[in-house]
Amino acid sequence: MKKYIMTGLMVALVASFGIAQAAGDQTKELQTKLDALLPDSGIVLAEAKKLDNTGLYEILMNGEVAYISADAQYVFQGDMISVATRENLTDIRREVISKTALAAMDEKEFITYEPKETVHTVTVFTDIDCGYCRKMHQQIEAYQDLGIRIRYAFYPRSGIGGDSYKSAVNVWCSDDKLKALTDAKNGVAVAEAKCDSPIKSQYELGQRIGVTGTPAIFLESGKLVPGYVPPAQLKQMLDAG
Figure 1 (tube, rainbow, N blue to C red):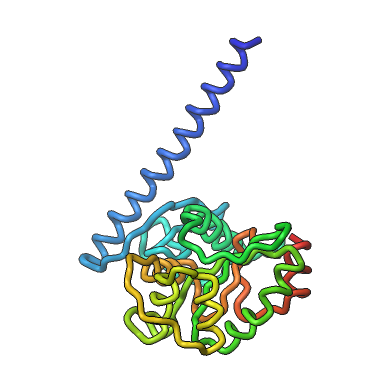
Figure 2 (cartoon, rainbow, N blue to C red; figure 1 turned 135 degrees about the vertical axis):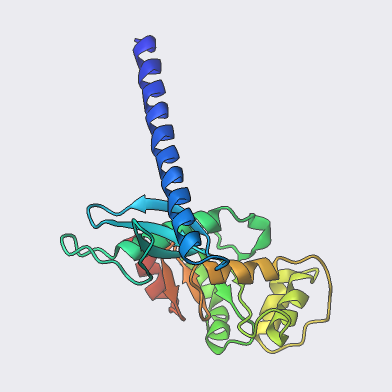
């Protein structure tokens, strides 16, 4: 029996390797074709995957979900909808990308507000000077009471080196990050501090996974919910999966 199980596992592994290798070969082939058409464009393709019988390939292009024809003559970015299932295939892919990227982050890189008993965890990209970010944080205890664990990452909308960025660095480099963030959200000045911080990498990650404004709430599924969501409504979203 064990022999058959091991044989089955080996067949599955070989098949998986073959699929991955084929996908990798297709990505390289499409990249070569695109480079010939657009030399020195700087466009980098990744994870090419044939999209059913459409004649298109779903790709990651410089971190964004896009679609390309087999001859690389046509590329477009936008939502791909399956008429049969009415599913937004692009959104599904984006959620996978976001979930994977956020799961790869070190928990120590977040400023996390823990409830007494965690039921759900969300990742919130925030800006210290954003009005709705401040409104959300003023209700932090209400989220905690509902069992919602909030992991904050920074997305200073003014960009790297702007005032919001500097404020985020001051918060991150404080001895008590939780208090410093609450103070900053309440308009209380936080002492200037310097250290190695993840603010720049968080901002860049936010750009790659579709953050364009704050607060940007990522659910456990990887789904992005843009804007402020009241505690009870957020709990309903999370419970619904």
